[in-house]
Length: 404
Image (cartoon, rainbow, N blue to C red; front, side, top):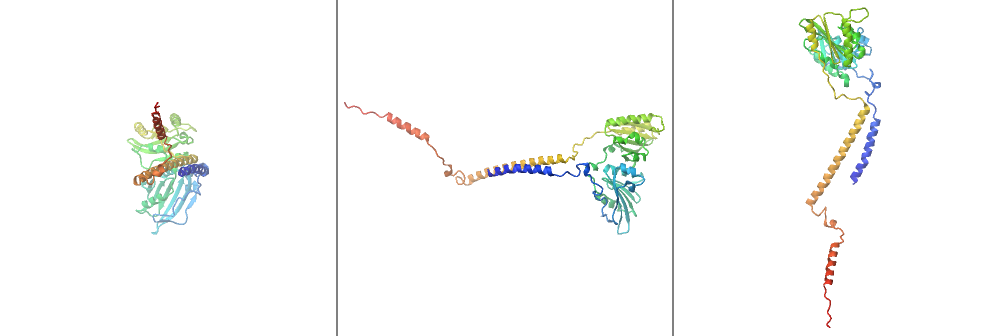
């Protein structure tokens, strides 16, 4: 009884403690926009040393995209540029390495900037998430960081050393580490290496000479663009994918593009130049456009390789701290009930098992002893039987006869 009384006192105490902990738990840093990490609070991009290279002095840092690239500052801003870190590394053999690392708001921005600076004559390298090299220059991105490395003298171990650097770079968390999903619908057959470009704004699109101008793409509608060149039997074609948030927006912009394609070029009005074939279609929320000096059949064949397939993600994490705290409180309550139920079962089995063993090993000595088993009895049955017997004897007694 004492055990169950203690348990009854402990349960309300634990409930009150769990509620107080949930109420006093501070909001997590990612719970709202006011708690976004600033540049000063973000972890350093470049390590002090890696792969035998050691930083000379301290890294130069800046949050101005014009410092990273004065010519394409607007492009970097569209990709979500946050800060730049540059430094010079040296080795014992006298070689030097100049590194410029640009950090973006998410992995999509780093990927877009990487494709923007990627040159077609570069050689692909297995560095970071994607990498390429041209002579002594190596370009790669890892997570939300793009790195431009320039060796004073290339060596056979340069790739391995940069792979070690890629592993030391800070990584984004949550959805910021994900790339845009619609780029997976770019066909692989006939793709010309290093020609894919991912675009998030009009400045980057204007620098790439696209088949559809930026005002028809309408980046104000949260659209994204992926472009690439493809070899066909009749020549090289350009494939452009435009992703919109909903199929309805995609259908509306497809009508605008078709109208502009059929319109006679006029000053001040956006139109599409008829340089060879031009075909478009909508597949889900994606517009696919094939153009270039190729035959109509090749352009249509390229379009047929683009087919949208919807995918549903069931494990999207929530960022609501109140929901998380309530979930932890309920989980702790369930765990507590399970522990108490387990203790009650163990205690009951132990008590019953010990009693059975003691009765088997020491019969009538510990449990159920004779002096403990006695109880007061009125013996009413015996009294009733004796009373009936005496009455019968008196009734059957013969009276003395009168001798007279």
